[in-house]
Image: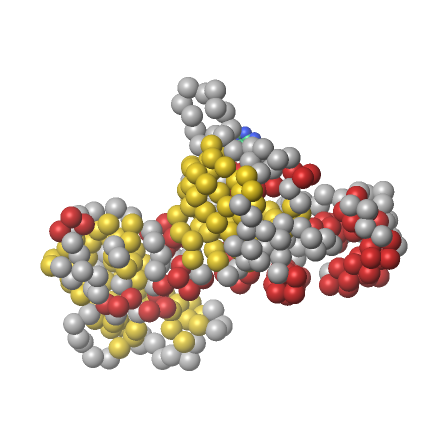
Length: 358
Ligand code: ADP
Ligand code: MG
């Protein structure tokens, strides 16, 4: 197990091009030993590139990579002691499930008794025990991916386990169980786990720390709570949470008041003069309250739609041209057409040029 460190690491696939385009813009970051991380962002933002730089499949065009303070930038994959699980199964179809799982251990000359113990332990974890003697080619696509996953987990001595959208081909119910198992494995063996996904739910339920990426940049690193409560950019506000954060262009009225069209709202942010233009206000639908009495930060709105999601209801309402989404408890009584909403100042996030004003 190891601490992984990027120092000014970036990557451009075609360094000879006249206009160099970076798939990953240079950045520095440390992944702590034993941490459980998710790498989250839309397709094409550079997740796989980042993971392949860690495993050594790609040598970065810029910067250096360290495992426990050792510069391994030019060390080949085989010598990095990394287990990598890809989006689609990488297994030997002509071997049995047992032999597939044993393969990474046999390559490293573990003794057969130890191999047997470890293969059975991993097979048990992934519900593969009854298939151990079967040929892999006879199994279904998701069983094959479980074997791939198993091959990534049989070795306890790896620096890190890197997983690139490993559960894509697995059905949702099993996905949920597997994520829980991966968490158990991380707790038991203290393996550094890095899990790539474009699915925020997967990231939020799996990781202690989430690295959010967009267009080749790391935009925020934080716990699920931090990403939810204080998105550092409007992109994170849109990308994390369901529904996306309510975000409105606004103007500064004073140091702690903004207007959205004709609507004036107090906020808890002290706006410096240098950051009073190009503003947006963000508020999570979870933090808006349905109230009976008008007060400073209340808004009258017309209800357009109420959707019942079982564990909560989602109200879509409008005030003039402003669309507001509000999440309420399922048992809440919702008025017929007009509603009074309170926007708590302490939950308003103010963005200047799409970046959070702190
Ligand atoms: P993600 O895994 O987040 O979907 P990738 O790391 O695969 O993103 O890709 C990041 C960017 O780099 C994309 O614009 C993609 O088209 C580009 N890219 C990926 N692989 C290559 C390659 N082998 N050659 C050139 N461009 C690539
Ligand atoms: Mg990818």
